[in-house]
Image 1: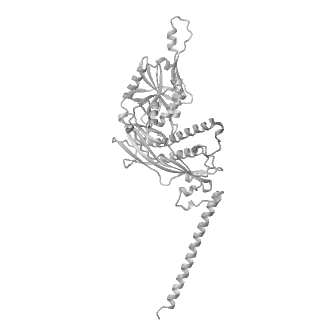
Image 2: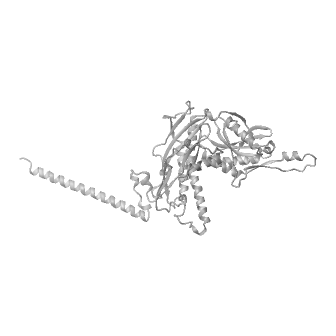
Image 3: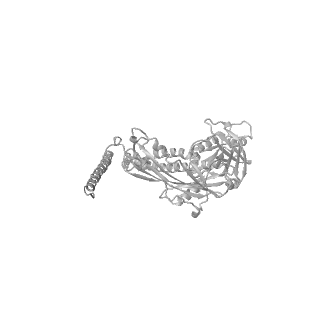
Length: 494
């Protein structure tokens, strides 16, 4: 439970000045920061306003309602005391989902802020708690382990800041809000930076349709990423070349390089499959550049946990981006009417292909991760498709993160020269790809049909020819040695 919240004074003062100059009656936005359960503290880095929706309407507005009152002269008082807030909860949640993709390890969307009068805030606590809960549900990409979120109220009448902890229970009531101490200080300058280039090479089996219902490329990739997250969670780590053996704090400043050590030849996907059930293999390989930011009072283990979560989140976000694009592509087929056939594999997006029926090799490139300078030496990220340029990146930063449009391209980091790729080899045996130097790589002919039968017969016939040749060579060698022995015996000196 978070008891104390410390906000970055520089950024919060800028946000207050911006809100004051705007003269808006209300505004809602996201709180970017971090909640530390070990320290029982919350840290606020910045406040990001939610942009207008597709129709150009604000995500927050004040609703005025006049109550019946028989007393004269009480109409204006009733008008101010009965005002409440309307919040487009779905739009705020969508903003949180997209911003979460841009945040790195140790940074999260931890709640919302509201700029409103004291009376309208008090009349809208249930709505605000529901908005916090909706944000938490979409902002936790890796695993939904949140049980609280922050609600910061900036009141302009009277002018003051208050922070409340919102318990994310199933049934939200007025008691879900609990006050917590709020103060401003230096937060961003005390962060320590950790960086890792994580390389992975996964072999994901394509299971026979009689055994598994997981058929589409997107589903197999999502399952593979989730499985790999469990393996990465137990990985050891080297920080600046030294093995981390205990829960300690990082004493030195500057950039710290991290390398993860996975157990050798530990592949749960390989162990879970029998040879006869596998009809193909999906190769998923590449590298992920990851950053994590640690508060000086937190332990190193927290930075490693944040970085591991950032790696998995990055892979999931890229898959989500491709999935959203595939959905739009399918919708465009539907709008074309008779132009598209849903059963035509050539017209389907690759992510929607049924790999159990696939008889050809296909490859899919993931978006690459690009890093943009943010606040006090920290970075945020975005993902670019091969056809996209840095202009798309700039537009996203301006719209989603409320950054200035003048972003210097020379300060943008592009460490991922090659984006992660997935290659589907539906006609090769999983065991030939996963264990290429093992005797287990010989395919099981009884589990393969049609063209794969010919492959097995061909491989066995070649094996038989090789064995026969070796036998004849041994026989000829034996005969030759006997003849040489006889010649030496006959012509030996008397």
